[in-house]
Image (cartoon, rainbow over all chains, first blue to last red; front, side, top):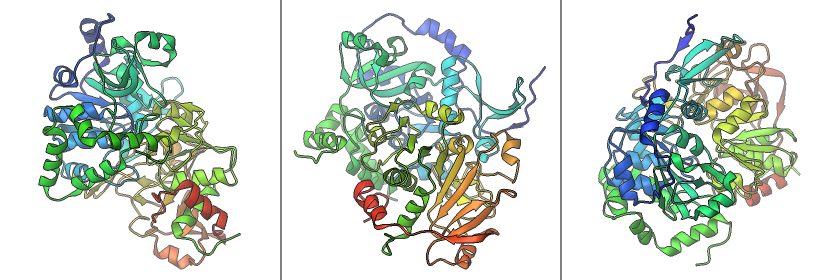
Length: 333
Length: 259
């Protein structure tokens, strides 16, 4: 008996990978051995991020975001990237400022939460220069869960009856068991997932403190995974508390120790937002003169060799003050 | 003690806080909704459980977070988890209230936080989109809506885009589309008044005006025909204690109540 489609949306599917193909690809391409996966950020991005890839980003838009990796993607001028826009804030904004993004599966974009709207994203979405399909935060996670599970679609109970559904690729059907209406969404298996964690060992066993957001699902659903961490620890430390390992080594392709790797984002239990940096950046993006943004990109990305130089430019004092802010202490340096 | 010296935003926070019962659970976003939930916790609802969509459950919020995922949302939390786990928890029926807002709302409480204009591909203004709003509006038992500026441009006959479902096109519509029975928006809090949804027609109804606001003010500010309750009330002003908590405890940096 064929399943009857009662309603369907018109949204485009940007990620073409299917779970069955990804499964086959995994057998041939993913190394199951414990292998030292440390490398430079430059090399990891060169090796694992390709023009036209579909990218998933860890954290929550401006919390625990892999900014060191984002800056490098912009520095290397990657093009035509599609992005999974689960609450996407400063992470996607910098990629869009750098001209890397072709399409976005939107759950949340354009906004910087309480800080207001982004000039860069408004220009690119309102002019239609960047393609989009709208979903919800829940929907994007459900799609990744299906991808991680290796099934081609997932029935959900959100988006029903709304324009969010009509502009998505979702299809409404009746459950063959209970008869109730559900929305079917396509699974999502990104080409590459980048994320920033509190700690990892050299094999890529990853631990995150606090909320995991969707990093566990993204790592499980994606073909390639690049991890930066605040601290590279010994494997003995991982083995001492294996329940904390949210992403096991065989999913991970590259590991880089990169303290402050989420700046100007908030890294829970490590450092709070660099509020001033983000406010200055937002002002640059809202400026009607495109040269202002160009010179910001030159100053903070293109003219710097790597993220270490970026940190040097910021200076130790500024960074340590963010640590005080995180722990609700008045800065003393 | 009721205070006379307050702003409309402060009043909205207090009116919103009073909608939350002690011992229940609420999913909140940033801004006024979170302020309302924090205020309720500090006053009549110490056992209110707060959920954040990024994965924080039951934190002891020390200060207003900037983001629904920042460190403050997991400060001394009882559980930190994933976004999908929060949505699953809501779908399983554990979350009583969700706070929502938007750029436009219609008489059935449908919300637009996606775009202004009639061309999806080239909108006049692009807003953030659903985020977790559609999930909350679909899955929570009861949604409370906060609209900061009650005006005909925001309270419209037809929203440009239904991001998040209210009662869609009328009684029974949510169920017809596959959403669960017994869910939907219950109250709307604006800078002029408090509204609910008349149980039979599911249409928005004025139930109380803020002190100094007339029914006529509300009608003029609403772009659709509004139902008016028979026993129309007036909202109660913030107490001096409410105001002290809002400014000194919750938002000393002035993110929501600009200094």
